[in-house]
Amino acid sequence: MESGSWLHRPRQGQGLGREMRAAMLQLAFEGLGAERAESGAYEGNAASLAVTRSLGYRANGDAVRDDGGRGWRRELRFVLDRATWEQRRRDDIELVGVEPCLELLGAEPPA
Ligand SMILES: CC(C)(COP(=O)(O)OP(=O)(O)OC[C@H]1O[C@@H](n2cnc3c(N)ncnc32)[C@H](O)[C@@H]1OP(=O)(O)O)[C@@H](O)C(=O)NCCC(=O)NCCS
Image (cartoon, rainbow, N blue to C red; front, side, top):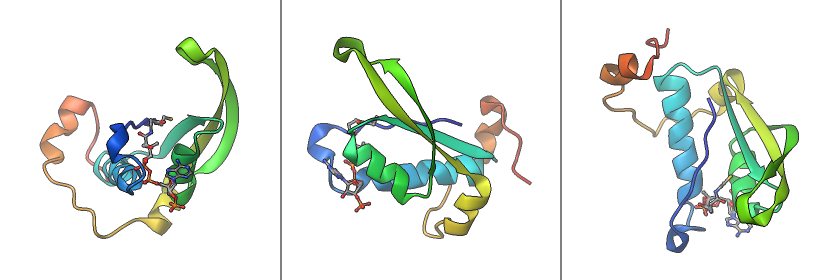
């Protein structure tokens, strides 16, 4: 699965982005049985890159993308595999109400 995140500017830089991504990874791996998570950030996006690196993703190449009005920019790509996430998984994040949504999301209950 692939994720992107965006916080309202006044809420940036307060630790919410990291918590939000950690929660999303818990949902993906524990709740939906994902095998890998991918992310990307434009070069120079220090906050996004710091969140990604702090959660154990490894570099997975780059791409050049058209960033709308800002033109062509280099995007750094990252991947986090299930085994790496398992080693760092948090025990203070609780998933609630996921199971009834699995069919709707086309996911199997994780083994
Ligand atoms: C990217 C984003 C979700 C990160 O969330 P955040 O709440 O601002 O980040 P956090 O406060 O959780 O900080 C996470 C890390 O980034 C670092 N950081 C935060 N803002 C930073 C900045 N402006 N410059 C450098 N480092 C920064 C923090 O020190 C922290 O590092 P640490 O884990 O080593 O302590 C948020 O900034 C955002 O929505 N930005 C605009 C949209 C965007 O660029 N989305 C990503 C598209 S790929």
